[in-house]
Amino acid sequence: QAKQEGRGGFRYFSQGMTQAARERIRLEARLHRAIEQNELRVYYQPVVDIAGGGIVGAEALVRWQHPEEGLIPPARFIPVAESTGLIDAIGEWVLRETCRQGRQWMDAGLPALTLAVNMSPRQFRHRDIGATVAEVTAQTGFPATRLELELTESALMEPDAAELLQRLRATGVRLAIDDFGTGYSSLAYLQRFPLDVLKIDKGFVDAIPHGADRGAIATSIVGMGHSLGFKVLAEGVEKPEQLAFLHSLGCDMYQGYLKSPPLPPAEFERLLSPDR
Ligand code: C2E
Ligand code: MG
Ligand code: MG
Ligand code: MG
Image (cartoon, rainbow, N blue to C red; front, side, top):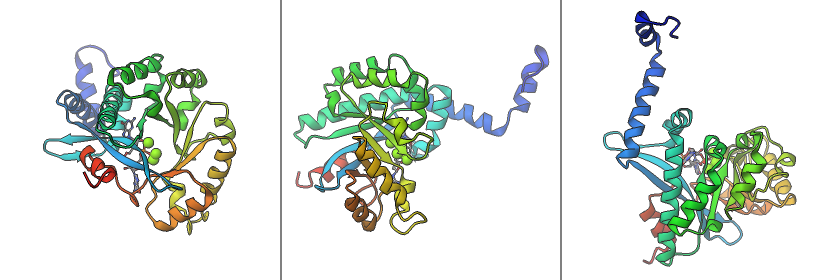
């Protein structure tokens, strides 16, 4: 830390800076460039209707297509983007690109899809987020009613979360809680918000059917979620036994490698309409 002001201060700061802090600053600068150079990509993971078996939507997941390092997963840059504020630009770009793609798929005659976009707590805190969403859907021509925004439980802990959610909902979008069960909010707490979908975190899906809890947590999320009027989606389904168990619970939708990993748009299109 730079305790001294003046001449020696800066030097003291740079020498004292940890390796991790230097790497963070470097990553931030590279990420800035990545946005400008159009190196971000959106991949789409299909969302499957469990009862009907069809693909009813997709989750948009950002990647960084680095010219030398290849495809960089979001876990390596979203945390830095969140803490530096770059997530605002990245998040808006992902939203716009997803809506643009969604409109293009509509125009190409692909089956109607609901597209889900992740929203960081920082984006959610912006007072004008509702206006941004309304503007992007209007400009791209993608119906807000086909857009779903995924929020984390921590976003709901904001003091004025209810008001922000109402404002978003007023644009026509659907709202989902991502990674449900990993935070500290109870289902009773969620009830007071205008939410549509609960996404059961992969951790509880992994426990189906032979894990420590034998799927007890997934079972109770589906049951209580339904009784409170939410749709329930299971994340990270990898095995047929997990899908069979979720089906028996009446869980509405799933995502997971069992169906497909996130795909670049052209591959997602082929999965949707293999005969084209
Ligand atoms: P998430 O929103 O919970 O997304 C689900 C993650 O689980 C994705 O990882 C997906 O590839 C992975 N996944 C899906 N099915 C399976 C499966 O069957 N097995 C396994 N092992 N993994 C599965 P991904 O794409 O690496 O994204 C990680 C996280 O990064 C996301 O978690 C989300 O929190 C964040 N993220 C991704 N894109 C964005 C974005 O545009 N904005 C924001 N704010 N966050 C994003
Ligand atoms: Mg998500
Ligand atoms: Mg998730
Ligand atoms: Mg997750």
